[in-house]
Image (cartoon, rainbow over all chains, first blue to last red; front, side, top):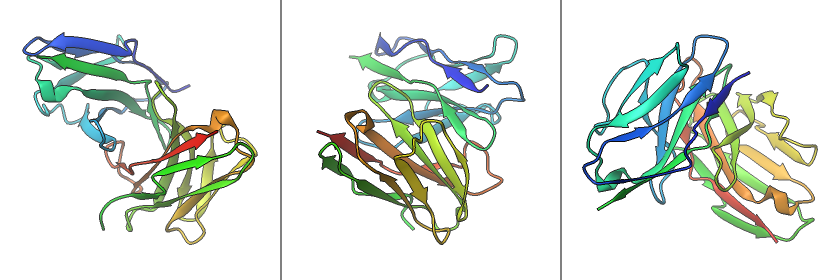
Length: 107
Length: 115
């Protein structure tokens, strides 16, 4: 079974504070994991993918196969980071999403 | 090509009525996906097409739901005898076979409200 779990529905931090959005997955094969983001009034878009190991907008995410986790991190939050964040797994032929975490950055 | 286009943006219908949504994917993308998103949930997979062939349907897709992609281009999603539980955002996405999870392009969605 393919499953993605994001345990926090809401996360609120102050500007400049570190951010960590948690994601755990269940997949029998070799996982391909992503973070998607949806800013207010915009469509769902890719933020980053585990394969590239890149940093996008200051965010990074490391795939931990032992803990089956793919947490999203940013050392210093900015107000424009406020959005819905979805962890997603590319399973057999389709993307499977977690329930999402609404991140609010307080000034 | 301006990306994935969905129409209408919003639809309000009375319970029991039929509704149809349309999705126009990126022209060179041969795969087209439908997802449903309810309040507080992530997108849930409904079905997908490769060209005109519907290759997978979720258990969420009851008999009242039907999707088509007649010429391998645009797709329609029809809901018959709508129920209040059908109220949701319906998202369409497309991608090219061989691209991974970063190859999806999503539309803005159609928000359905059943009253």
